[in-house]
Image 1 (spheres, rainbow, N blue to C red):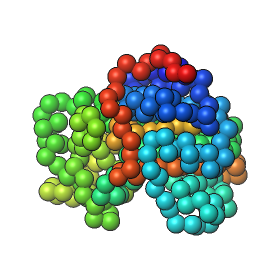
Image 2: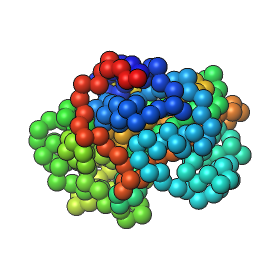
Image 3: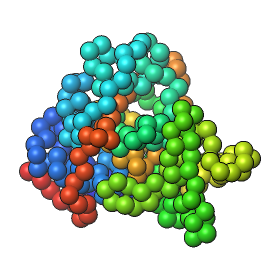
Length: 264
């Protein structure tokens, strides 16, 4: 297995890995790489839904979801995203967000597997939340560090969220599900959220993933956010998503120095 960092300063490409055959040594290295880089891109996989569940289990215990139209019977761990309603959930996440931020204990890790892809459209954007905070002016960092946000379901999170393993602060905001910033007026709240939205999208800060069939992307939701882009509903596209529970995540003992390392 070879690990090559992406040039943006976050994310890494994993080569020479068949996730169906990942043993304890490879799993340990993958977890360390995810903690270090925030996002992993692994192309050329061939996973059944059951094999995706097993591969996601390398990172911890999985969340489950209710069975709905387009979802897979008997596999509540799979959340299927699609361009057509008969294939899964449509029009999902076209704003900056981290999966599971509506939970009191946010979802730490998401794992996507590309089942079927169209040639055009449906790319996913990723941005580094830790770097987004680091690039703020010190006075803005200080202001933001004292603020909290409320989801529409009442769940409250700090606007600056420290990673539970590394302690590194990140600018954490779900632009679609957050009702507002607490302790400020509606106009100031809206202005702050719009400013964060623009900051996430600043030039040079985003990675755009063009999906190919067999692609896997794994994201640390407390390190990076993502955003879907439109796809023609006439095209057929399916992504299977699995997620790791906050109370079941397996963080490595430490991160650092994974780039270019090999594992048998």
